Image 1 (spheres, chains in turn red, purple):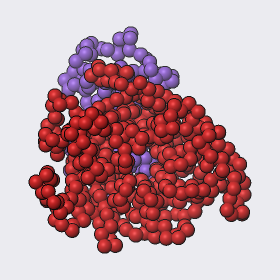
Image 2 (image 1 turned 60 degrees about the vertical axis):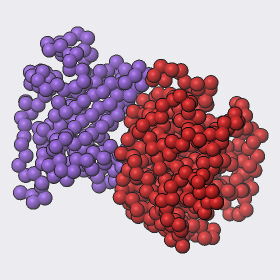
Image 3 (image 1 turned 180 degrees about the vertical axis):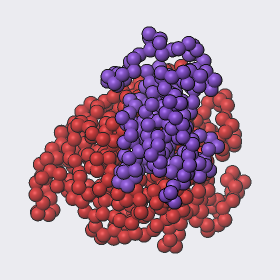
Image 4 (image 1 turned 30 degrees about the vertical axis):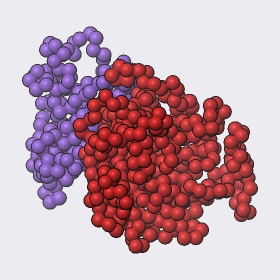
Length: 434
Length: 197
């Protein structure tokens, strides 16, 4: 498929499947299960729809817990034998749902179709066999004053963050079974908080807002506190997502020392953050590593602007992705497998980007705060590698995410699909073809 | 007089003065004020006699692809919305005006998306109902136009003291969606839209 400039793109997005049956009303977001071949779709019909990634069929409709649209949902990571789903609703509450996993669900990698209608093994014995009742609405988390927009579990599953139009971010911790305690109420933003995301390795939380900023939080002496404000977007920041740990599409196999230096710097900074906005831009943010006691101060290029002992962090805009969207960019997702990024939004486009080494001859863009005018460190740039218009026909697309491919057609264990969720209730899976 | 009414004596236009496809008023208006992107392409003769212009009739709604939606049609959809505090239409209060409606057609042959921009003129510069009026216009158009249309409703520049914040709210899909689940607000909107056919 040609790009708008006419040069052919290296990949195309091909429709793999549409999950069926689709919801009859707007769907907001689809969350792939961290372990099982299923996804959960948050729908404005007050339900969460659980679809199979092997058959693309609806397995369960989870309902009864929320009084208004379910805006968002997230699977708790790191569990075995049980699945826990957090939901956030326009009814100002968050919900925790539980379900014991079937054996069939655990042995998912043999490609056998799942049978979620069988009752499976349970630790408790009092549940009836109604399939929808397998999902227990375990806890309702009350506290927000208006619509909950986003929920996110920390990497280890210890903390749950929720955010709302009431401008606050709440952090919850499960003390014992189904007993969640509020451990922080962060009221830093001046507008609706649109999304929350956790760092993949640290207890570092990011939130993005209607006030056009991104804020980062960490725990400091038992108190959660704002440690950085990321200014730059000119409009609502719809979604933030961290770069997965231990993923890099870039290597220095050719022995180029400047590339090795870039990789070393990247490890020092840690996973980056990506954000998408109503201002049509998608931006990558990087942490400036704190200066440690350096035995070789002459080799450090980082200015020592952060006072020792401060928990504050310095993040800067490292790059802007090529601007291909013509209307608000609602969703951005960073692939764990390939380091690629997918975005989607109001214009109905799905765009896939890859980071690559900047060719020495290429001009650096002037408008980006590159922290790498050091000739000993290589540069990277982001390129669009695939794009499709009208991914959900003429409807807006609210969410796009990477997800391991689990159907029989998969070509390798780590092959991924893109899952998109649209205004008409449709959820679609896409493959990248070259 | 109700003390809560913000603008007790609004200027009211005669229904016969409002733009319509059949009136000469429209032609004059279009000729001197430029209503849209394609005005330069529209010959100045009476184009509604153009045999290639598709007839505007109720059954044309069934056929999105053949249907040409222009600024006048958008105006007709929203001018009959009632003002939330007067028993008058947004058209007669000049809150919505034909020259302030702009349709943008797809930017590339592969894009299915068109946009409608409606700039509304609140009756007074500090009218706190501007957001509700804008929401009514957005909801009316989203319910009436084919889904390929993206609807942008903004306050006309210089006509409201907090236009920026109203514009931001009206442009926020999530806020609009949540507002439509708010029973009180929906009651107000239903009343405003009840005068639309």
